[in-house]
Length: 201
Image (cartoon, rainbow, N blue to C red; front, side):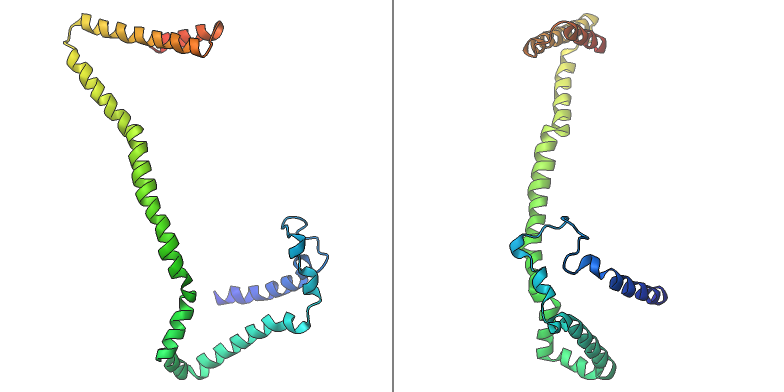
């Protein structure tokens, strides 16, 4: 992995240097209006005329941090370890390692609250509760219950079967006529609905 990363270092440096005017600088039209900045918050003109020291300050901090890290971990690793394992070093390390406890606050008060809501309310109450009881589980339970009632009414006689078929077909035609009058279906649409319904039955 070190070889391709070493090869990619040089193009990244030169591409960043060659294309810097596309992204930064006064008067660049690279982004056009893709990123809108309110005129009162536009500070690109002030950034152009900032002192050179402030422009080089991030680079100086980066180089200083890299040099100090290399120096301490190479030549003073024992002293650095003693500093980290001391009482003051542990407090500083824990404080910086937990990012000012922002992750702890986010996980316990925001993330865990949303996860509990998603499980207790959204999943158990709505998905598995209301939707399943009204939807597939409730429908299958109602069909099973009603078919058990109808099965008890059937005595195996052919006349009873014909009676229930006639009764169901009549109820369906009454409902079809009722809905067609409500929906104001007339003419060919009503005839087509009757033909499709009778063919379906």
